[in-house]
Image (cartoon, rainbow, N blue to C red; front, top):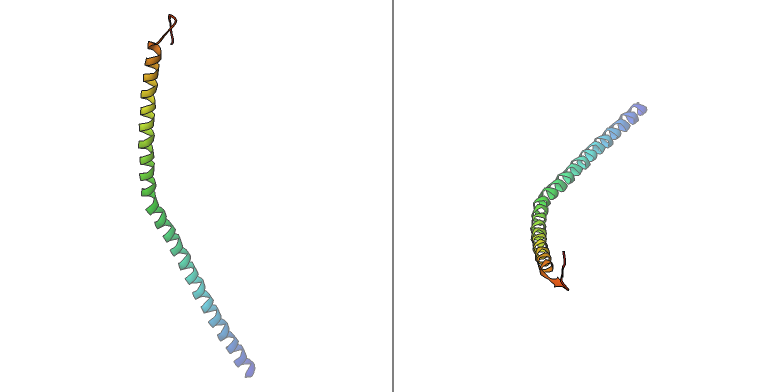
Amino acid sequence: MTALLLTAGALLLYAAWLYNRLITLRSRTRNAWAQVDVQLRRRSDLVPNLVKCVKGYVAHESRTLTTMIELRRQAVAAATSLDFHGRRIP
């Protein structure tokens, strides 16, 4: 009879431990997926800022390139109009 009670008690303690372990694992899993959601939200919030930054940089580079092309055109036009000792500079 005592062995039966000890076995039943041990099974009851094991069942309680197993239940608590499963609850802990479920909680950790939910927490991990919540962290994934947080990271995905952060990423989706940062994408519009990145796009805005890239658009600003492209506009700046476009202005710089346009200015450089115009200055080069002016330099070439000025160089072709110069006359060095009777020779034109190409």
